[in-house]
Image (cartoon, rainbow, N blue to C red; front, side, top):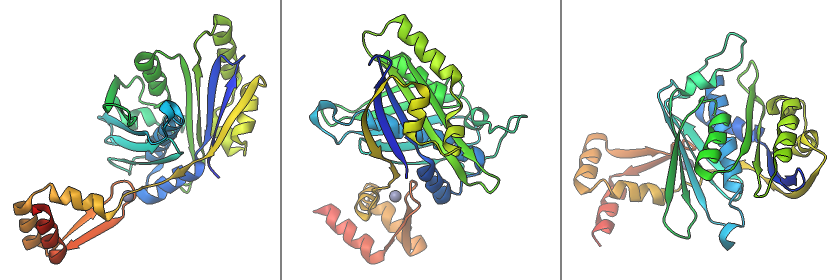
Length: 293
Ligand SMILES: [Zn+2]
């Protein structure tokens, strides 16, 4: 089962998050019919997103923060969107799921598949205004882009390692990530120890493919750690008919009537889970009536 662990490490001068997201990335692959490089791109993005959401658990004495992360870029994947909360639930989609690009080595070429663009992170912490911060993508391999985001937007030195391994049948055999963030008061020695540890560390997707748990991976990074928490992770979409009704109402009476006249019904599809919601003429007329109240 997918899970995330949080720990202090390096004399409590760093916080480490280690996630196994193999099952939830497989679910994303199944929902969206992702080809391997699209799986790797969205899988890395989902992993970084769900870890980031978990960082806000318990912050500000409340647990209902929501994050929306968006990559707008010019590669064939045509952008990606995820949303996540503080409870280990995440969902996402890509503009174009059918992307398979490799380096000469055979490694999936996520950077080229994603292309040049920006990472936008919108935080709704439910305490004050919603705010969005944006950074340029550095390599578009996702991990480096998040490390750059933490450094430039939040002034936190971080290590971000994300990985997705796809087999010859396009199935996900290992997906996950590690995010390490330095804590206030750290010294150069701590930073050097972190760098040494990550230089020696096998890639996270290989460790997960080999059957290592997040705890095993944490032990491989350092034995100097203190486990804080463990939480299950899952792909979860909370869409419902209500949300789509509100979206339809916002189109206005005239537009809705035209659509019904042309097609007899209106079908909407959730981008995140591909669930369909169908509205016939009776549904639409009652929506129009209700919107007039
Ligand atoms: Zn949905």
